[in-house]
Image 1 (spheres, rainbow, N blue to C red):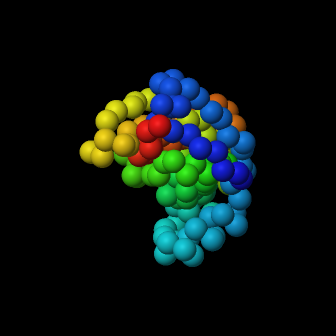
Image 2: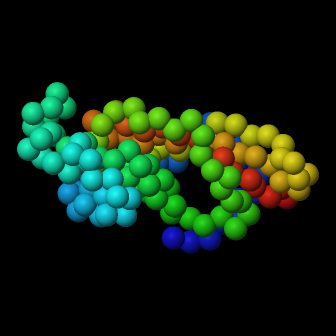
Length: 146
């Protein structure tokens, strides 16, 4: 991880970056359940899941969001900060042993309330090892202008 100043003017529509991958483990399930209190059988009960149509444990959507967004944090930009996330959707289930990575595309730019800032939207797709999109969201940024 390193610092890289990226100002509003440096973001360009359709610019894209791709992260490294990360394999989801049973430990991830247990730790996330402990952090959130979400011990629903869909995530934690292997035998119960075998009897369900999906046949195996499903990763917490919030965990996949957290890990997928964490993968994007390879550089620190002191010129921008996150305003949050919009339009998040859990598109496909993720299971133990799946490997995910994130693809980030600059999709929108605009003015901010403060004239010295601009808004940038990064469209984030979290993708599994089969090339299937499993989660999508838009990351909203405020970036300093030069």
